Each structure stands twice: as C-alpha cells, then as structure tokens.
Image (cartoon, rainbow, N blue to C red; front, side, top):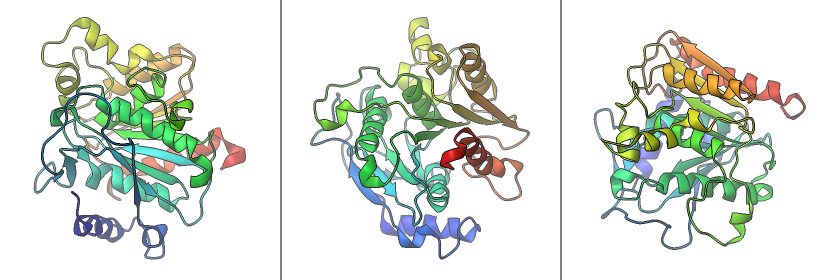
Length: 315
C-alpha cells in the first residue's frame, strides 16, 4: 500500500515547486478513500500480495498490483460545484500517481474542484482487460449518484486522463453505456457519461503506425485482429453525442505522438462534437503539470479557461 510518508513526500514536492501555498486546501483537506465495489470486484483474475509502489526510475511513485479499486477524494475549501475524475497513465501496467494524477488532483482541488483520483485495476496485475473500463464507469456513476453529498452539480462532472489514463478517460466519455459488468445497486441507475473530457498525451489509436504502445499490448495483445484494433481505438467511437473534449499533446512525444490526438480531434469535429486541440512544441511524454520553465505548464490554465468559457454562468 502507499504509505503516509510517500503521500507527504509527494505533497511536499508539489508545494516546493510553488504550485500551492501552505494555506491552500491541501493542508485543510487530506484525501479520503471510497471503494468502488462492495466485496469482490466483478470480472475475472486479480493479483496476489499487497499493492506495490514504484521506487527509483520511470515508475517512481506509480502504483500496481491493485486488488482494491477505489477513489481518493480531494475536497476543496471553497467548492465551485464542479468535479473531475482523474486517471493517471502507465500503460495499464501501473498508474502514475506521483507525477501525473496526484499533482493534477491537487491543482484542481486548489481551484475549487472536488477531485476523485481513480486507482483502477490493471490487466498486467492479472485482471481481464475490461476491468479498468468497468472501474471508470463505476466511479462516474458513484460520483453522479452522490453529487449532493459531495457538493457538486450533476451536470458538471468531468473526466481527465494522462496517456493510458487518457485512453481510459476517452473510452469512458465515448462509450459510457457499454455493458462491461453486471450490477444492480443504486449507483447503476446513474449515467457514466462525463460532462467534459480532458485528455493529456492520450493513447488514441491501437492501429498502425501507433501499434507500439504498452496500452495496446495490455488491452488487445501482441497479435490482435483488425477488429480488436478498431474496437479499442478511441477515434472509432467519436460521435455527435460525445462530451466537449480538450486534448493536449507535445510535438516531440515519442510514446504518443500528436497523431493520436489529431486523429481523435478530427473524428470528433467531423461528427459535430465540440473539441479543441493544443500541441506544444516541446515536452516529450509523461509531463504531468510540467515545470514552470516549460510552455506546456500553461495547460491547466488553458483547460480552466476552456471549461469556464463553455459554462460562463457556472464559472
């Protein structure tokens, strides 16, 4: 499991970077956790042993071996009535909390959003490939059902994802009614469709020439059929009913180059869905909030301006 020391260390690093002040909601509201499922989650498989947290290297601060899917809830001091479900990347074999989803959650919390950081099940941990998608749907339904309790509006619940988390967020936004599991409790009456989607360096296509991602291997294997590649590529499912979507990419990203975001943007626009695309000159992959000297560190402000502009009466 992730230790309190790990969480405090990450929070300290965020504060040291100048992203929050000591008087921000970070100090006032530590996160709480909500389990997604009563008892054993639906679906086959599962890991053995405790959760793992990455040490040195590219997986630093990333969590894996997840048997207890859940949300971490970050409540702001001054709620703006909006909520965001945040999903870290990691190729569906780990979840990048420390450098992606947690800093974004803290930034949003500091701006008045009620934030739900999703710790979802991973195919690489032994779960079937549909498990993370079931978890994301379930999370959206819980948030919407309990919106009054959380102090958020049912028409202002968005989703945000990084890399593979962007694929998961996009899939949830585009196919909210996909039947991924059987459930009969009170949450299942709610819609899983987010009211807006924010996709950062997302995996969009599982087809050539974008067939080298870990996401593709974890979800459809190393020798998938053309049908599977189509079915799990986001642009396949673009429709006029898609929620407003904003996409951020970096031109020099070697893992998910801008072609991913461009493909989804073009598909959404062609079908009459509202969409916006931003491609930064530099940044590579996995940049999270970015650093102050990077132009791409402007993306959170761009997102907030976009979101507020679309809802001027609810800003």
